[in-house]
Length: 481
Image (cartoon, rainbow, N blue to C red; front, top):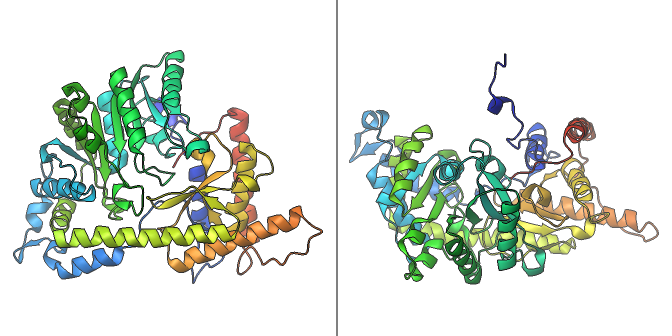
């Protein structure tokens, strides 16, 4: 008799993705400026740590909110008791107003149409449970966040069918690509229930053009399917072209019938825009009352704490603070992205032009020994274990072209980013000197000081053994964000 369920023993979570294996390597040898300066620098984590000082300053000026007081009197007992899963009305009101502010107040959101969840991961999975049955499919443009293989599929049984996008047009969605994905799903006897896009894109750092959005809207209208627009990076847009929300398009297409209005759903979170992933605040916004009702019931399995509601309702209700924060945070993101792009350019590495997000989509195709995903993984392992930088290979994001990598820039100090760029520049110089041995080239060590060879050897040996066993069992790699 089996003692555990199939779900508990299956290997479909995606934890064996190169995306997560890079994290494992980092966790075994994490860089620290003082205690471990030769360690691996984490550039695979899309966290926004650039504006903590603004948040901390607000907390200092608003001690009642941080200490759970109202008008100087403690409300600890009130917040400690069980709260309705609909959430505190004050927080929902403040959140929808913040969402509107990020979108330039071009659209407004109704507090009654929002469902609070424990992060965007929970929001996306909940929508899968609401909109699809096990064995149904959602279409996703590539490259996409590796975690979707877990978030959308693992517990729901929903399938992902890729909408293949290429570098020839900056990885934009096209009508032929949409149709091809739909036909592929039909050939696999999968019922397509919708399209899910991330806008701004993770991992590209780009915003969808109005033409792309219109193509997607026309497509979901003609097929009678849903659209989920994951907009958790909407407040990180720091340049042109700007961000256009799916709700803005829906508003402008006012002649759409009521059913289309009900089939467009927004996912949002405070993890990226406010840099608060540990607070676990996500949200679903839908014009469909049945979706809102069902998602609200499901939110019982992943509630946001009352204390979090209270603190953030006070913070987001401070309009002077939110206005200053959004502007300053975007300015800092722009400066940091420019630092990474210019540093990589000096190393002979280009990035996809971007205007949003906490990362760059980096083109290292010229560094591959050959145009294959095997060579991409070989290069990735060198960068992780020899150079000491954990970046995410494009294959983990289901990119169709070998040689692209996602590199994060907002989860570290400026000095650490400069060190990471120096390491990569030295690595590229060394590659060139090896490929052209007759040319006299002055190179520096891969690190400012020697990388820990013993740790690298141990980690690499374990990785190769695990990968070998996995390849023998299943030649197909599973990739994630």
